[in-house]
Image (tube, rainbow over all chains, first blue to last red; front, side, top):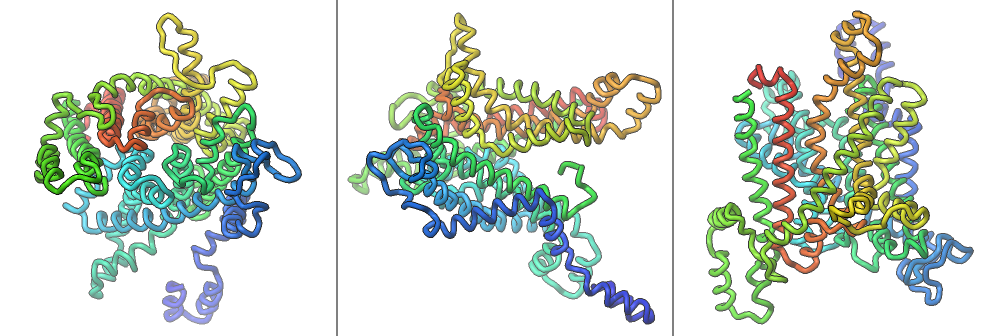
Length: 307
Length: 316
């Protein structure tokens, strides 16, 4: 739009008309989101995510039973008309537990994107913008953190803070900082010497202003793709840690912990292992597809490049 | 070549320093401190101070780190708070199981990823590529612990082909040893194989349009020779690097798979350590896995230099 108005001053009526047409073209971000929505894979991802977010919010309204109430004498039932997905070893309704189990997954994913994403982006911006010693120290620290498999980093944090949903979110958030930090840094390095950065500095803008108001908006689209990937990663990591007994503590339901409970009853009641796993895999598949669709939408030329 | 090796070794030093420092900090992240845990809730201020001095906790952090590294270099990783056993001994008992599982998974994932990657690159935009990429997406979406549970249901409970868990490590009973390894290693390998085969495919596709491939075709070489002898060799270079990086996720996955299949490895030791608040054990396990990762990556980078002559000649 800035281009349209600038050339409008110089040229005549024809260009002015063109500027008017330009005004109606959507913002590039909106256009990209629309392309994501229209992409079948992206639509599938958004649909799964949307349904599960709604289910998590409306869990008390749509669950047939309280997820922690034990129905005595109804233990380890298969799917039936009273309990649609059956019951677990304590006679709790599996459908209600699967619905409530969406909560820790999505809450952790949101917290990781906000905390881990925020810290990573700031660290990457600072490292890329200032360079020198700050950059060297941050990069070596990131290298060292990369040497920790994320699950093990989770072990460290949980060993220190004790098990629980919030602690798991902190652990995963910390694990994604180096990944996002590197991406943000490489974007800043690309943008740092552009003319608009120089122009902003010439007008007297300070470092923080240039970083957050000028450089960051230009790096938004690759960051969004990475945040979508991070969401998938944190859903997987949360479920893994919950499976190991380090996440959401009983009796609050979480998919990972439900799968861990199911291991003792695989012979009698395989439904306990199948239901939470299916929703978890669907969510992961949806988030992976969403990330793919966003990547295509933001950069249609590089669809086949694989990155 | 010599310069490259030296450079790579020097680069590893800060990583080893930072990561061992992070491992060291595990003990210090505990709320309160280790002395308070050891002394119990009814300890007096004097006895607490005495334990602190004994453990060296009143020294500056860097001094404590130095002392800790000094002990490490002598093979002293401390003792388990719970059982009093030396941690080195605990790790020695558990490490072979973990390393065996990891290496088996890596080999299996390469054995799956290579043919799939080549097939989807040579059949790009065909039905076969679509089929392979759907399988890849599924493998990436199924968490390995759920995949393991499904595999137990199918192969152990329904078909009764393989044991549902546990490890047989007996040279005289090789059949059962291998049988006990198949399910955990394959489950662990699938996720890695999905990512790897994609990576192999994209690398092959990129190389397919390079001049040397066109030259090979122009010389009249048949397709198999072009793909396997010319394109594949060049496309494999970045794959080796990725293999090293993926080793981290493999080690993390091992910990989970060990829990699914009751595999007696380092992961179980660490999990027990967390639930028993036996932090020295957690620290020891962490140290072992992190150092393993760093060493593997160093080896990968050095192998890379051996394979790629450009690195040997240039100074990059």
